[in-house]
Image 1 (tube, rainbow, N blue to C red):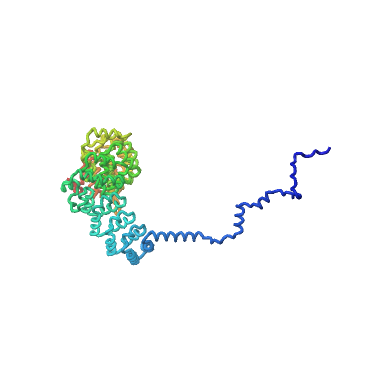
Image 2: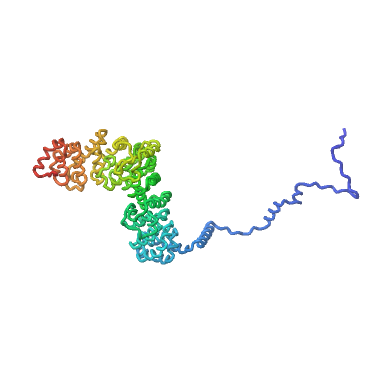
Length: 620
């Protein structure tokens, strides 16, 4: 069967006239590329055809050197004395070594000072050059030091506010003669208030204040009192030590002084510059003349955790006492919480310990005190017992405000108050009390009499002491520590007072009857130590012969009949004649001098013959 013709095929075009048409060549993708090459391909081909230029590869070391050279070049353009600073740094590295000979160091110092001559005020602000200058001032001769002082004298105020130059200024003050020191303090006239508001400049004023004598200190301080005293130097006199006397003698207006001091002190407190003793002194003087509103505002502003930074000075601790005494319950709580983890450091500080004593005597929130202060004292109890200042909070709880443990000045500081706040009415006190929150809200900010030691406390003092000492568990740990360290404490100049108060049971017998059993144990420990035989030729003195322990034991015999009986039974029975000479004779004679008839009856048979034979003398 024949195949049918394919009608689906297209009809062929007719041939052009005049000849046969050439067969048409089909286009392929390859031909397309050859005829119209892509731009990108052409570009790549051109690159391949052109050889790459040879670029030398830099090593990391070379790049580092090049960057360093560029940095050096920039510094030379930016810093006028850059080359000189580099030379000085090289000399400094040599002169500050420890094993250098004295003559060699002097030569290097002289070379450095010669290079710096005439440029000291300019280069003193540099981080490196200021260090070189400090070393030179420390090791140079007096003539060279005088030359440096003369060169920087016109620039004191500028240098005092520079972060690096301030160290040179303080070093110059440390090595200055009396005349140079007077010149420097004179240069500060008119700038004291401005510098105290400056974080760096305040360091210089404080340093000068610490090094100055009483007249120079008063000169610096008086500029903060009044604009007249700041402008006219001749008005300043060292005779008036207190601001009240200055106002009276110079006939200044009290209101004007208060306003001026407020304008000076307020920016200082807002910036938190609270560490300097000159500021503490100014604040104390301000509170003596301020009216009730102004004084209350200052107390409120200072009653914060930052108060801990102030209580390391005499006037700072007085401010701390004012804040505790006149502050509200809420403010007291802030102060106490600010002492967290710092109680040990505060207790060991002479001035800080007084603030701690004041807190334990006034604040009624015993739960907060136990949590923050008592717990930290317990952790370092053994260290505090023999510490001159650390023992004071413990002694205050055992025997409050005792003249045996606190000097008259310290007792006066504990009893001081802000005059304008003493007259606060009862209604204002109640309003202050209700503003407290939580446990602290139970306290009272009552201020009644400046001579009263426990102002502001609503609780009975004995109840407060029992809660802090006995109920908190501190007393039990205190007795245990005394038993463990009995011999060391008896021989210690400071520890003997603590072990005496503990063995006596504290004032008002605060440790009894709850801890009577433990107190008897302590008496037995002391008697056992005293029962050790007297060793001839031994370097260590017996407790009856040691200066401190013999007097402490004698005092315990006179004041505690129970201890006297225990000591006689365990250590002295049948041995009184051995101890009838030297320091120990005071211990034996105390057995008859005590007012206890029970002790007399116990020892009379053995001790009375010693008195009759003239071997033992009784105190009249």
